[in-house]
Structure formats: C-alpha cells, structure tokens
Image 1 (cartoon, rainbow, N blue to C red):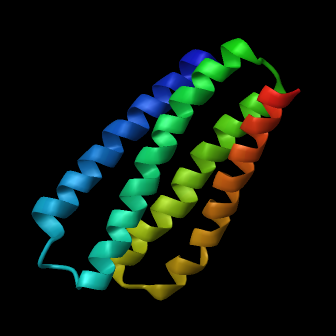
Image 2: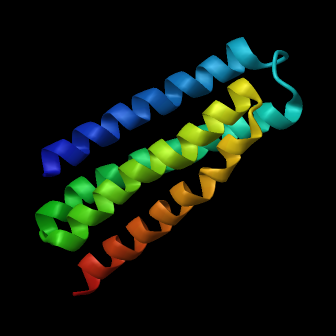
Length: 121
C-alpha cells in the first residue's frame, strides 16, 4: 500500500502543479475573478492532499491497518470530489457542481480523522 499511496501522491502533486500552471497561464483573464479563485482553491486543496497521500504512504509502514488505508482512500476521494467539482464549476460555470464540493470536504475531514486514529491506536 505504501507504494500505491506514494505513487498516487506523486501523481496528485504533478496534476495539481499542472492544473495550477494551466490556470495561471491559460485561464487568467478568461474566467471571472470569482471562478478563477474557485479553480485556485481546488488546486490548493489538491496539492495539500497530494502531500497528505505521501504522509499516508509513510504512515502505512509505521501504523499498518485499516484506518491508515481508509485515510489514503478518503484523501483520493476528496481530491476527486472536492477539487474535481471546483475545477468543473470554474471551467463550465455550472453551479450544481458546487453541490458536490462538500462531499469532498467530508472525505478530507474523515481522512484526517482516520489518519489520526491510526496514529493514536
């Protein structure tokens, strides 16, 4: 699992940087300031949780078990739901994508709880 989560974290970091650069160079001036900020929030949380996946990869070796594995998968789901919905909202302007964002936020929160639980037990 540590290799899988490390690879997912590395891929997540790569895509967060690529999407952030895309926004800075291709979207600035094309999106409204509000939608540009929405995209940037998605990229920021994408990167935070890509780094968190690297931490999970380490934690799997230190505290193996279901809680650590759940933390990793919850971070992956959070990136897809939270950041993905913000990217979709910013690029399309379709407001219902914003309704998905809180589900991703819950995944992020639950991932942090599971990682803390893995360390605590």
